[in-house]
Image: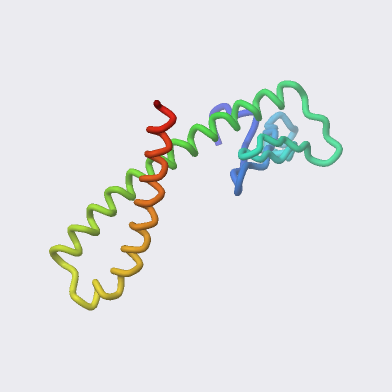
Length: 134
């Protein structure tokens, strides 16, 4: 591996990451990764690994990573929703132009219930926002 490596590596996992300090300054010039913490992005918790004491720099780096991760996950959520809009449009086109009666029979009830549920939630949330705006 060439180039400068970062001082920290974050192994992403559900709700957070395991944090490693990267070390290349050893006699064998091998990359060593020492786990220093586990973090939970949802609640902001940082747990030092074992009896380790995290430095102020460790905390700052981990906190900065968690903030960037939260922003990335929020962007992904919006992108997923916009892709869902595309899929709904493609599904409408499929139902209108390509779907066989047996295929429509297979998916119609599930789609109608999911769309009804989504519509109910969206209408309720929009009404709440309008009422708060007054």
